[in-house]
Image (tube, rainbow, N blue to C red; front, top):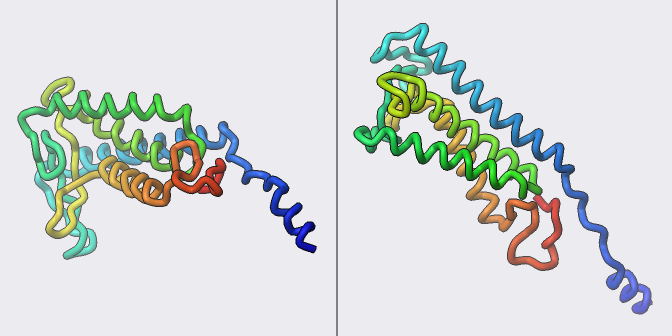
Length: 190
């Protein structure tokens, strides 16, 4: 009986099938497009129905729409170097596109898709909104108590970073393998 157990233990276990590349790329592209389009549509809605500085209670006192234009980053940091944020966002978008070829995890596809969609959403504002190309002010409108005013692109970026942190803590690499555990170092364990 121990010989049978030893033989079973020696037999290789087939790896969990990796999601097909087309599925992973579709997930990535789908979430990127979703985040980008939702961001741009909500900004179009805000700019066409509200006046800058207008505040509308939605779920008082927790949620208000408060239309502002932000020339800086979070909490209006760096208002005088708007062009730097344009360059950083373009660099982030390019870096994400270079990493996509390594995707082997549905969760990483989701995270990178949201990150790209959010970065492109705010980059679009920087490039095409007033006052000038590359120096545009981002439309922000979601206000929570004691927090920065933000938009859908910001939410997508923060969600992506949270997912990336969880994946990193769990040891799931971009290609879907588990880091630090040779027994589980097989693609598809996400």
